[in-house]
Length: 126
Image (cartoon, rainbow, N blue to C red; front, side, top):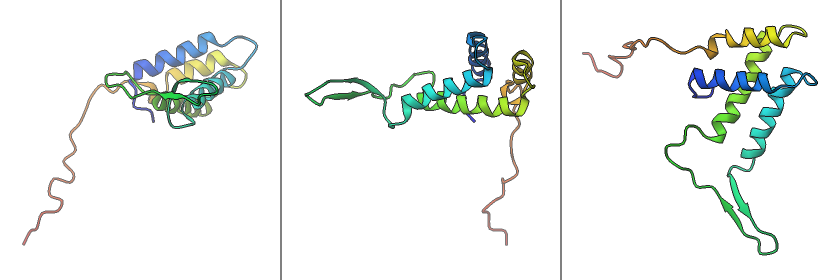
């Protein structure tokens, strides 16, 4: 699962759905989004610029403070496809989109609980 806020995930999903023309299915739009993300990360490094005969290539240096990386966007696309597959409504992209927006994986976490289950792990009693 991509470590991206639920609101950002839902915003991405909404824009993908809204940008999807009637000529292609919503699933095809999700696959195109994933293909674009894969193209950006398949070499393992992001190419900023390249030259011709001089064999010069510049790679992007990871910057602190960026909202999320290309790898996270690629993981997000896979998460969308997984959610789509779990919520698909036959031949009805609008109903599928509504079901995806209501999926628990796209809901914000509103409460946190502490886990004290291993508080005594490793202690020597005796």
